[in-house]
Amino acid sequence: MKPSGIQLEMNFDGPRGNRFKEKLDNGIFQLLVEINPPQDNLSLDDAVARFSEIEYVVSAKQDFPAALAFTDRLAAPGNGMDTVRFASALCKTDRDKHLLCVSGRDRTVEEIEKILAHASHEGFRNILAVSGGSLPGDTLKEVQSRLYTESVHTIRSVRERFNPLLLAGCAVNPYRYTPGTVFPQYFKLMRKIGAGASFIVTQFGWDMLKLQELRWSLARRSMHLPSIARFLMLTPDRAEEICSGKVPGVHISPDLEAMLRREMTHSLAQFEAAQWRRIQIHAAGARFLGYSGVQIAGAERADHVNILLNRISEALAEFSSFEEWRSAYSDYYARLDMAPYPYRFYEFEGLFSSAQPSDSPVMSPAEFLPFEGLELFKHRLARRLFAHADAMPASEKRLTKKLLVSCRSCPACRLPKTDFVCPETCPKGMANGPCGSARAGGECELFPRECIYSKRMRIASHYNEFGSLEEGLVEPVSSRR
Ligand code: SF4
Image 1 (cartoon, rainbow, N blue to C red):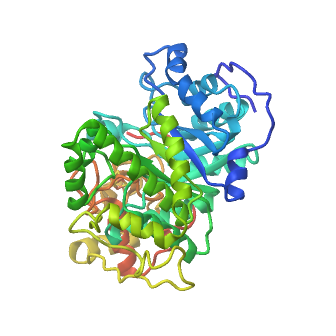
Image 2 (cartoon, rainbow, N blue to C red):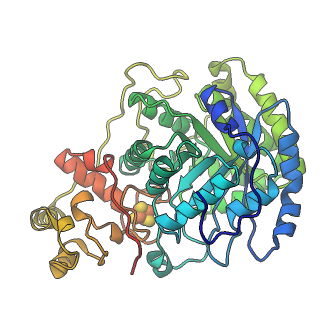
């Protein structure tokens, strides 16, 4: 399949295998080094020159399976460089080992399929589908006017149009600490798996109980998808950003913040030593918890990548059992509380009691805020009045829809599939589940209102009907206001 409108620069002549998938299938632990394609004010040659040493270090590593993971974070016309074009120029060989992220921000399904076709044509095999975040500096209005094609649609496209040439994975943020934010993430994950996701990559974080919670959650549902744990190499600047809560979807505990702030007062060499040890402990722990690999963000120099590969390789040999690792992790963090107070919900009791879950892990009691009063009254009315709104012209009963569900005039009404909560009241228009960026207590990252998925959890809990949060697929819109 040749993508129209794309200048193809080379054909990939290599084997048609997929070594990334082979490692996942065979339980071979791998390390992905994350690369952010640069801004597109740089020429392609200069961009390649900047990253070629890292590519060389990774591909020369023979004794440890390592590859690159390209992000699509800044992808937007006139902003970040086209990820496929950049990755193709950087990696002349071994493209089936690497992972390419494809973001849905500012792209229709058709545009995403052109990118997938381009990636496939160039010999890439592995796609991480994400819905995309806001761009730095975006106002609420700008976010609301952007189109976010949700990752479930990219995953479905891979399955329906590019199988078996491409393999799609999905992202999840397990670092959520209220029932109203934990469960929607996992419901959405089930939807992504249902759409065809074959592996998972996590948001980055430091709470290993949460990484275990994700594995146990999958096991409880008899899902045994390979998962890759993403971690961030901290610099003092990045640590400051994390501590100040400036990174969407990343919320740390006051204890961890105090620890990072202490480290920031040390010399740079001491600070770096603490980060190398931290990455070692987390990578080794991920393997004990059943992860198939780690993806490390923030290693941006070839010498750092080289150290990273060696340190992680050492760490994997360092601990002989889960118990030994658990005690090293507890010592390293001096038994800090990792939950961002006052939120500290974990889906299971007894996490860390063993590496693998028991056959019937004990669920923690989950309480949701009530759904009652005027909210409930309006919702009941909406259920009655708009039960067939998806089969009618979207303009039908628009005024009533505005009054009851704050309708924002989609080209096609999807209310009956979204629990009568208009998906366009989410700034990113998420119709199949939450983004990973809600605040710790469940408010939207972009404005001071409850995330629509925390609300949908309250509704689902009120009616004791959870199916609409994880089953089927809500179709995308092709444009927004
Ligand atoms: S409403 Fe929820 S899903 Fe939508 S942007 Fe806000 S946090 Fe993300």
